[in-house]
Amino acid sequence: MSNPLYAIDSTAFRFINGELANPVLDAVMPFVTDVHNFYIPYALLFILLLWKGKARGRWCALLLAVTVLATDPISSRVIKELVMRVRPCSALDAVRLLAPCGGGKSFPSSHAVNNFAAAVVIGYFYRRAFPWALAVAAVIALSRVYIGVHYPGDILGGAAIGTGMALLVIWCWKRLRDAWGRRWGARRDDSGGAGEWPEGAAGAESPKR
Image (cartoon, rainbow, N blue to C red):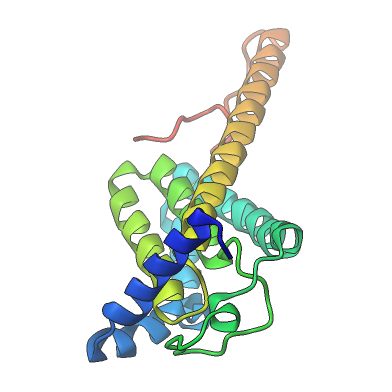
């Protein structure tokens, strides 16, 4: 390809996949990139939010589930099929492949989409946790380039898409929360002010940031 953006992307890929190679990362990155290794930590985080997080934690858990359930199929089944970009491990020679190349398309990286989307949701509800969530998302995303299955552009695009979709989910949730709050307030007025907000009701408590 003569596309200058592709040339930059390929050069950056060669640097991360080849020039940064070392025994430590060769051991760490294949582990980090395997989503199966994170099922238990993800499940524990979800349970902790529901169990100990009170209203804020439960809303965070709900939005995490909604966001990832939306981002993953949109990324892998819609955007990838529209862009149809071939993975570097299939398009380039002499790639250091540390995991199966797979038959899927390259852009965007669903790992980047999902993890950056999750980081944004966590950061909205828990500001202090945002740098840590962002760091985890960045390392997982970078691992996809290091093991040879994605270009850096796939990662950057995935991060942007995941961030945008998470912000959209949060925006929709806030609109629904505010509408629910106005409706609940109207019901209280109609009943002469009787009743209280149910625990965790939308609009009852803004996330502490």
